[in-house]
Image (cartoon, rainbow, N blue to C red):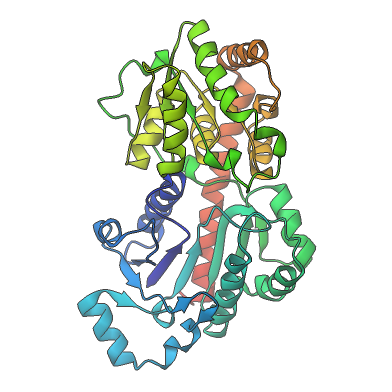
Length: 384
């Protein structure tokens, strides 16, 4: 069985963590399956090869999508390309697990949803399951996009909205369909690895920036003038509490530039650039607290019981903190230094809250149930 994992990459540590989460479940549920990954600028060949992944041949450029014609390539030729060069086509793939995280909706190019719609039609025509793993979806305000998805989404074998807002955005298009369900982020099942070089973590408070907070994708304009000052203020507040600030780059050059900007005001601040997402999660889990603007950085902290203050540029953050019972830990753009100090002290003091521990356990159980349902859908669709 060939299983394509879509929407993952090796620069954004959250996306790569989702890939590892899926790989762990593939080994558990379908140990003989072969992994398929498509090339993209943040998913280079060498990284895919380390996972022994077959490469899906890209037959799409801009609006031109030839994937649906791949079934007309003779099977002997496709088999030779797979066995000798590791190349496969859409027609060879048995299951697609879409782990895009957040890629479909008004804050993203409409081309994303157009390609998703084409894929859904194509795989449904071949009788093969396309499953959207838990992710943020919508809102869908563009008329053409709404029309495309209204027709295409019901063709999915399973649509897992990550929270209530996403569930409602999809329901507004499709109505109540059986394959639309809600499951939270599933990376909470992944165990982090603490690198030997990360010492005295219990004295450190991580600051994890997100360039999207000051990009055009953030429709909350109040953050534009306040975000960088908030990060600078966080450094001072952490030191006031007798703790050590450290900057963690969770994704690439854009976040790295923000880290360097904050470091310019205090050259003693360490910038952590860790390539391994399992170690990133381990570093977060071993820290005293986190002030975080990256979704999966927040998940890694909240799911491990690490005090976490967050910022938001999308509904997915509000719903995440709601799920973990910590909606008050989201920061507003106009928060003062004194209020930030109080919030951080409150979060640290609240670490042993039994109700929060029970919510973490319940969400991990929910992730186990997700994979049971995914397995059941795949087995039923493929008559396994």
